[in-house]
Amino acid sequence: MIYYSFSPHIYITQFRDQVILLDTKKDKYTICSSGLANILLKVVHNQELGESDQNYLNVLLGEKAVRPQKIPYSFYTDCKTESIGVSNIDWRLPLNEERVPLDFSVIHALWQLIKVNFYIKFLGFHYAILLIKKTSKKKKDYFIPSEADLMYLANIVNKACLIYPSRTKCLEWAITYVLLALQQRWKCNLEIGVQNYPFMAHAWVECDGKVIMDSQEIREGLAIILNEPFRKKNI
Image 1: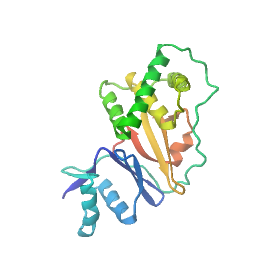
Image 2: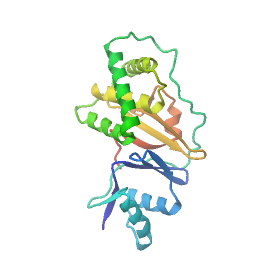
Image 3: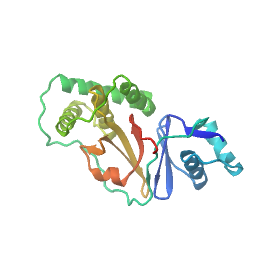
Image 4: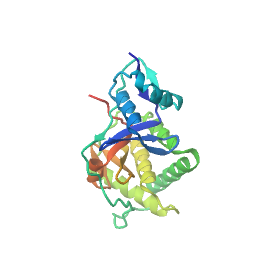
């Protein structure tokens, strides 16, 4: 039996009755048709593909979205089949957080924010994700920091964002935070959740199952399509 896995730039999730695909190289979300969704779920669950699946499979292979391999695919895929979703996500920087002095840590965070914006704007979202993966490989023995440390870093990132001349969106904030956390060996993930009815995507930082500086409801209501660099494995 031939198994298939998703290429590193492809992520999928299931929200209610629809499968959503994210191609980070194209920075594009796709609400999959029933036929394509069926193939993608078969790949996730290591089910054998039949002759009727060949046309969709050839498209996925041609676009390098999936690739054959000898062992079963093992990455976890979030499914929120019963979720009612979330509403009115209008992420903004908090303006009443604890004051942070303008010191080296803030300047370092500002530099990371500039770097993240450069990657996203000029190199693309895919390379920003690769930056997270590359940073995570530089250190070992990651650990869960205290809640006070997590909040203090959030305040530092907020301070850097307020200095930055352009408005910082949730994605840039979250990637900057994760990069700084990884440099301290903190086990933090960038997570992106999506929903349909209507379509919405939102990015945040997760540590030990908890959302940092955002509502826990988004993690429970949105289908998580991307979690890096510490991706879950199927049990």
